[in-house]
Image 1 (cartoon, rainbow, N blue to C red):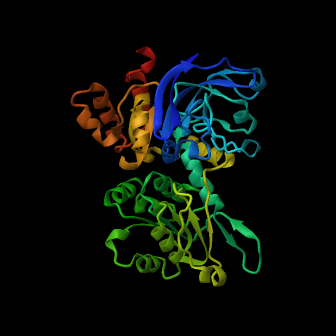
Image 2: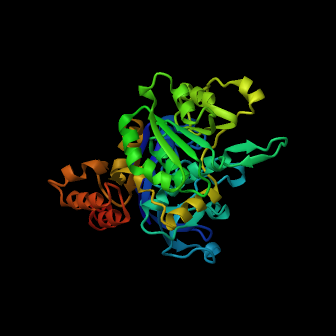
Image 3: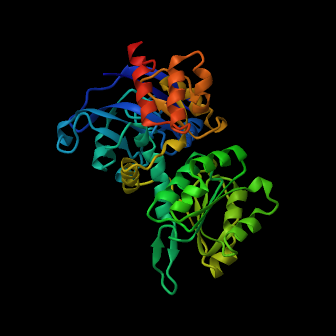
Length: 422
């Protein structure tokens, strides 16, 4: 079977190509990709090429498919897996396989599986590690967003506290505690806000900071303080760029106690130092943002480490349980649509990936069987003046409070310019 896919050959060398997939083996699964959400981690892989830990050294000779936040439909199942999977099932994939201790992952390391493709061969190890996850909810884009949401869920579970007089670690953010999300109005920060409000372990106080006024305003529209109050959470959005002493201001919001959990969503030393200064006794600083430099460092207060039991943790991605939790939350109605600000087709992947840090907004959602320039949802109405597709999408999204939706996705998939029919 032929597939079209974006493959990486080296640093900033991405190519959209059509080629044949090899015949499916008895321990593999053939699948049709429908949607992929472009991740900053893919940008880092594109910038670093073979220097990236998950990208093979011989990628210049044996290119791999990019994209790891994807969903689709199973087409054919090898005999080994026919008791667990069936054609027609919708799926998502946990890319962090951890297969025999390897860092290899779909979207980085494999020649025939990645999210920015029309068709893929799912290798045996994905099923061996239980990383091919059925999705029973509506649409496809929520399943694509389950991977980034799993990263957030994993971070919340990885934070920890101690029991007085004991060396036991109590895993997870402190229920009913004070939680600060610093630099938190970007796409992953929005996912964290969403989860913090609607999960089973909610804080009493949630403070979200950023220095971008527009991003903070959008976050407050999507997840308003009024909505948070209904779930027992006191929510504040703070533009720290407009405050002379953010640490003093944020500590005052906590009643002087500080924060039991602080998440840092930007690889900026000053933000880490700020988060360290906000920790309450036994506070946990969770460094969520992944830096591009292996020499990235930031100062920490080790006096407080010793006398106030403050500590630090960090995660890179979620595990299977986190992703299953995300899929279950979406199937039960947790709406991740607020994360999506742009849509595009397979031909928009290369430019979007290489310029991702410079494109404002949240998640860029790719529909791999369509030809479509990357387009912001906010621009649908203007585009619709000359394009009936966007005219209708503008109406659908406006009826959904300006957000992407399963209805919008269905309309796009039915009426978009399909590359398979070119």
